Image 1 (cartoon, chains in turn brown, orange):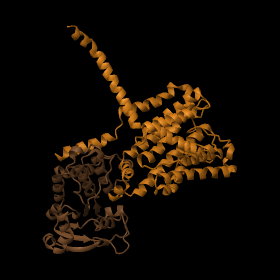
Image 2 (image 1 turned 135 degrees about the horizontal axis):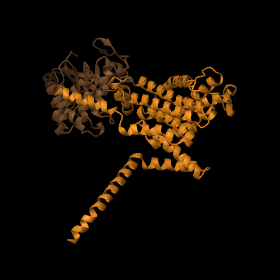
Image 3 (image 1 turned 90 degrees about the horizontal axis):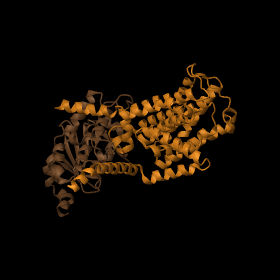
Image 4 (image 1 turned 180 degrees about the horizontal axis):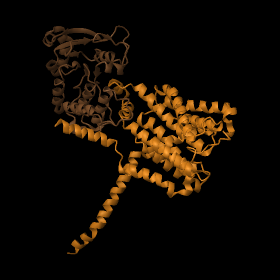
Length: 224
Length: 345
């Protein structure tokens, strides 16, 4: 993938999209093949170390810290990344670099009005935004979004899509999504995965015109 | 605009860690007991030690989500350690011996922490229990050193800092325990409000995500388990130093189980649970033991069952409801004369 790319990975259910992300991030180990990040072999690197190397992900099903507030969650990620995560003496919030960055992320992800609520009681759309915000707070150069719009009600959808489209250009994004509107408005390149193998790869209009893709994927969607 | 929001965020984060008036009142009262209850030093001292011990479990259970039935391993190891260094005159000054004992317990905690990193709650219960049982039997086996079933005798504790002798009434002993408890509490409080403490709550809440945002989950758990073991060790050493005696029951399962009981009574994850739980537990024990010396554990058991079945949140709900009803009643009583007056018109 190119730096700054907006790449979408699509495919029918069970094609192996999430498995692919689990392999990239180190949740699963590959049985064959190697994984490279910016030319560096990270196949044997632990998940939390890959985050430090500049790769962060979101989850298809929210993986949040339900007992914390959005402010605490984001503060946690930021202080972790700035290297004070093991600091057991300083009180959080005394470093202005940390607070400035927390504020920037909270505003970017429209979480200011709920930042002091427990995550467990947030509306689903806000939880989805926080899900991306936590990954973004790792300041990744490669951001992996696993179905960010899944299950978000129509009323909260617009805010989420706008936020995703407003991600800074220097962050490379790999998007997994079933929502074709989002995929085609967002991606500058699309790969189609079927049964765990790369099926078609190309620019959005090429992929949309490809008859094989229509047959296995888009066609299914229309009929379904 | 951004700077105003930044100030708000910074202020909120700092406010989280500020001492509330209730906390200050709690500690003022705790130190006031030195003058308020001069005849009760022994039970007060036992309560302070139990509170410190419970604090150590709360750190791993309430913050990192590690359940343990083996805190007695650290309590007991440090108990014997402090007794032996005093008996053989290796470290005569009690404060130094206390610190050395805590470090010894922390070292054991570090080594055994790798056993509790993986696995479910049940495996953690069994592994921690197993470690404390093994240590208890080791102490039993080497009775030539530990005194075995007779306990460690002939321990002579020197005055603290060469000045404060452990007196018969237990005054100095209690003050000593209370100060150590307070210092440990301040330390633990500082830790849980630090970025490190926040990351522990994240690990407890969702280890998968914690790793996905770059937290080295394993090392955080090792660190907190080691710290917790050190605090448990300090509690054990305090017991030996204030009683000038140490017996095999420092390793007993009862001791670890009582500790869970204390935290169930007091609640976990806010640091005061262990302290409040220890006070309630000791008061209950003392009160019931006076009523029925032989069967006091029956009533402790009953209290436990009620607390667990009712659930803390529901009990807090009852208390809130009772308070609401009381306020309603007083409001109605206050409103009644006016109503009568209007009826008469």
